[in-house]
Image (cartoon, rainbow, N blue to C red; front, side, top):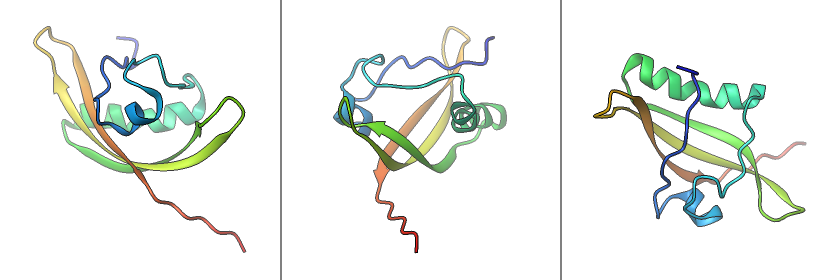
Length: 103
């Protein structure tokens, strides 16, 4: 009812697991900001339309305590209905090579 999503499981072969581990709280995620709202909108769109959503995201990932790196990833968002009546999404991601050059 809050409109927020909770990460319940991270796949062992997923891009995030390879970078941060399997525990949902092991990777940094800033929530409640305008960028989070924009990126999370695709989850709501998938649920509302009951359709798979495919898109690309550019985000900053901490790669150490002092270094952040812009990385792109592709994702497919699948709407789900759980046996207990909850609704959610399953997200499949993979990092994408992105090369941006400014003149």
